[in-house]
Image (tube, rainbow over all chains, first blue to last red; front, side):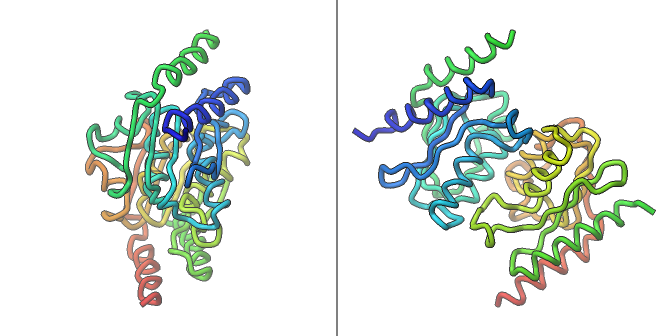
Length: 146
Length: 146
């Protein structure tokens, strides 16, 4: 069954890949008509690029795969609430749905204007999918760091 | 003399390149110690990528040139006020200064929370440099479109 939980598990798989590469473990998947358009995980350390977030990597790959700079029929699944940059990128993509697992009051987009959506007015936003698993990975990363 | 106007003229040159390529004419330059680290212009149409803004292209090139994911001693010059995505990217870069020409109440970062900066607290923000020339290019683009 193709549920939000099903696709979030695939985003979690990407996040685990980031963890193995000693990156902050955040993963993202772009899906359309139950098919995966793109995958991405955080690569800021590997690429030495502060913009190489899971969402940006997955979006750019999805644009490339679709040959289009808009994704009005796609859903992006990401394990952690998007930051301001990623929320802005999702706005430009005109993506249909954004689904995340763990909220992130410190670095998520809500740090700039809590309660107001930076996403496109047509974008549906869903949060809290597999939240425990998504948070767990982040905790594991920072526990290993200490 | 290396002034903000001097470097903004180089950003304008990038914007003119975008205009020639039938892109919304926005250009950016990253400078450190009066040396140019990177240049970029809007390539959203060419790359079919809604995230291919001048600032993102210039930042990614600057990270690559410096072999660092932070740019605490650099300045980014851009002809138009950064959008939410680009402001978020500049936040992550920890860049020293952000300088823009024309303000952009419709698409600039201020559309989300006017009056509150999404930039890093240490980042100095300057606006209005060669504003007339920067606005002129945008007007020219939209006049040609009609």
